[in-house]
Length: 175
Image (tube, rainbow, N blue to C red; front, side, top):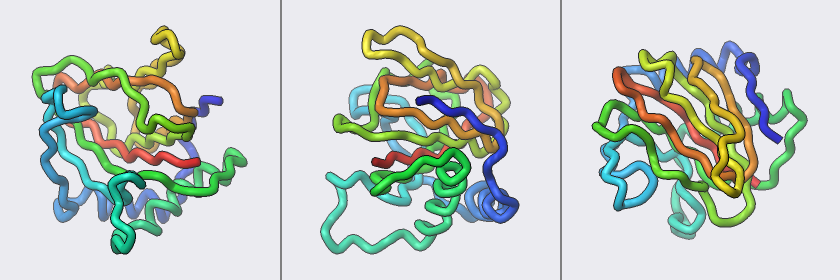
């Protein structure tokens, strides 16, 4: 099941996105790669919840964790999606890096669902997310629009990286 939705965020969540994530005070951290250490696609990221396999037993909860889960729940409540566990939450900021697209990937090797939310209206409207079937044939191409969410099960996908400006998304994985 693939769901695209542009109208699920509450005014409170939009205010949180604008005043916190998109503010000049929200830290983003440099990463030398987007998908794996060999791709050399630089980007900026902020991890709210690390992958289970990377978390320590007593790792403290990120102070904004509940704000992000509220955003996830707004989408899931509207679409009657239930989940047992949030696996990962991460903000990614992609910008022109000389690469055309990211590697084709899945976020976890095990069964999971994913929600991507575009946080800004990027200058490059072609910086899409491309969803693929198991044979790597295009199933859907999703173009970025501010506050649009795209929900999909574990499936291969890639990003057409921006040629100008930046592209902000929040990534949720869950099961």
